[in-house]
Length: 610
Ligand SMILES: Cc1ncc(C[n+]2csc(CCOP(=O)(O)OP(=O)(O)O)c2C)c(N)n1
Ligand SMILES: [Mg+2]
Image (tube, rainbow, N blue to C red; front, top):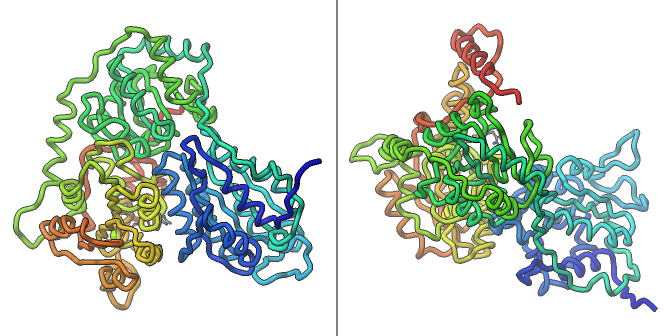
């Protein structure tokens, strides 16, 4: 007879999750971020309280930012581990939807467990339940469907017998990886059921290394063999497949230059002779020149998003062929690419064998030297004077303070573009950029997640004043947990990068910097005082020299450390980069807009359709 164990559905969920391991023997889910309400406190809350040793619970301040911490944790560990996030019903649940979108775009695992309305409908409508007049099955949690790789509604306890293994499969599958939502009806969480004991047996989920199809290998190898000037575009998949060594071996064996996307940066050390630098809209001239001339573009683990491809204006050599090595067929087949649908290590190894001794002539080293000659002065320490610091100088100061163990992280604003162009990353995973969603407010919570993933590393987070204002409250959680990381706040009194984008598209400066917004009193927000009020150590510095001195103190500080510096909202690194398609108005009374539209139409003609 089958041995069963009587548990509530919530108790069963927690017990099952605690038994799921990765290949290193860790529980795949490191723990659960929770904010309770009536939708999860009694059921899931009771279950989590009883399993704290096996699956810790952390209390955050905001459901979205708790999820940012969880997602950053998974990203930093190359998706080997993840975290769950649970909320009550209604507003708490909807607060997580943005974060679900972020994880979805970036292909990162996270388990969302929003509470849901009563399955038995006794109290209808329960507090915070929306009422759809025409569909009795809808709740706000249906908003998770388009931003989940797997969605399920647990409206009977035994649904977990199928839902939980599916959830684990999706979070650990390299091709399908992404957010999972198990929408958990609050009455069902508390319902008891006789579970087969075997359901809770420890299980190991290993990284599946999908082997390439030999026919695809040959087809792709034939194209590469016929190339004169190939280039490799390294994306985030290189990191998630732990393929940095395989990439380096392949590039070196065949002498093919490598350029890096935002997610791929740090795949090769910045000073490796074959690393031509960052690619695309926020790329280096060295990388973009090589890409513009390439006759064969080999994507490895990249989604080819518009920032990488210059909205498909970058890779435009006549007759250029596109190859996409990707574990997900959706990406391998993009834009008419010749697919090599496989794990990055397996694909590169097979391709290396097929190419044999084929070698190309890499681009002249002068390209990189020219690039650094152009940008190094921008990051150099300024001389004495009263000029406002530039964001580039801030990057330089942090670079000079960084060690081999430093992870720099960011998501939105001016800094992602500046860091992509300027940051010199040495070790894999030393550059953590969330640029799939580029979600303002990822930064502070994300820095905490990175620190939880790799406590020994020195984590430095860049945030603008805008993104700080949008979502900063996990700073208090970080202080409570004693998480040590450094936050550099560049305060340029508004949305500097969007203001520059507005000017670049011919627009009047409007509603981005506070100076051009409808306000009665220009704000003087004291970010250092604000951070201190949440338990962080903080300081406002008046110059790059003071910033360097403040950074030098970071090791001695317990908990989050916030350094605030005023920066000039106007300068940015103008060298490098490529076109980015932003819809410019076709008619306008503004001459600047008309001029920008004319340029836009010219660039659109350069856009390669396939
Ligand atoms: C949640 C979210 N809302 C809006 C945007 C669009 N956006 C991108 S950067 C930006 C302004 C960022 O301002 P700040 O953090 O001060 O950085 P700055 O550009 O001034 O350096 C905005 C509004 C976004 N990326 N994410
Ligand atoms: Mg700003």
